[in-house]
Length: 134
Length: 282
Image (tube, one colour):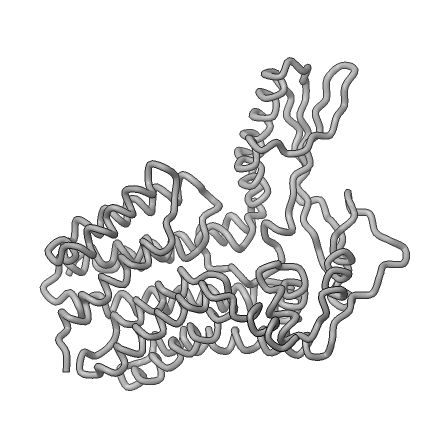
């Protein structure tokens, strides 16, 4: 029967694409359809995004607001330029909606690493991203 | 003795039940999936209709795309599986086509799972993954206390000690993580046990027909053990339905074992058995 292997080919293609995204853009192995769940501590619980907004006379670290949690989660899981840009644009738009000046948005994606012997945790910067607001 | 069509119907019904047990997706996908699952269960005619399962697969693909890249892996596998159902139902010998596709899908999923654990992750085989996960993931709290022998006070202290300081800072004199020997042994058994079982399932899916008995035994053992602890019942149900699709209709008891294991995973996921056991022995 023609087409019977389409699901199998899709599985292989998506899994290979996931490996590429992990290697090239630090996608967490848990996501992306590559079956890397429960294989590593590099997942959402141990990743986070710091947001700093700059403007003349202002440099402020922001908590991720509820309205941007989904965008932040995507950027933390896959800190690729296009998702970081989307998050930064959303941050800038939100600041403007609230009447606050914003000239630059700085994002840092952190990943927690655990010592092999003691398990002590330390945050490591995974990606930094600067967005100049047009 | 039962018929291939009867096994196929059970496979289709259990897939529909799995869809209904774990509603997924945004507002424009979830009601569609629930409605399709309900129609499949109500109408035997629609249950066997390829277009229904193609629509399910498309809706799941939209759910994955809408949330990309955050969807869990079993959502992808469910999309492939429902597409496989749609394609098989157009074939003259749907049960045979579905059985073959099922072996490929499970085998490949487990190959990638083993590669991620054994070759591509730096923190799995050295046991860090389970040592940290058992201490920090709230979904494993009761299991960690019950099997690992950790007190609630020590667990809270460990969680505080495992929380990283902001911006990469580190303490000069960090607190010691309390890990009873039982907990370390549990982490070690979990680490090597899951890799061994997943590797066995992967290998047996690609083995010849003589390995059918072992193949079913490995998959059933994996699902029984893993989903008693892992909080992803949806993945367990999907694997069991896919395993059932490979069952020889003459082996009625094996089909019933799959259905019973499907229900066992349901009870594992809905009954907080580690917490109840922990309360009982306190």
